Amino acid sequence: MKSKEQSKKEKSDEKTEKSNPQAGLEALVLFSQLGLTMAMPILLGAIGGHWLDEKLGTKVLFLILLLCLGIVGGIAGAYRQITAVTKKKK
Image (cartoon, one colour):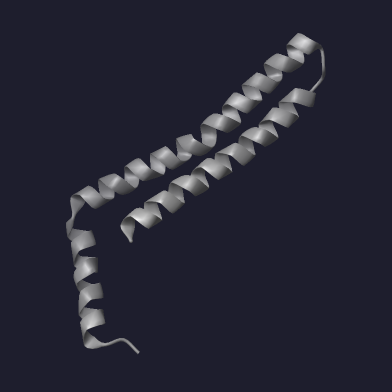
């Protein structure tokens, strides 16, 4: 059960977040960073894999391999970014 002080503090925090226009901008920046953090390794893996497949004469071996590595790298980078932001807010 929450005490009166805890509920007052939560309401105060909610008002601060709503009245702060910079918080919306920070969220937008975080969202775009997160998208780029995930998209770039995937895109670079696909492009690099396609290029290697053309140079080495393989069909889609390196495309699939580097695409999968890019997906794993993108997810790992996004996870690190999210954990850093949540630690920062605490």
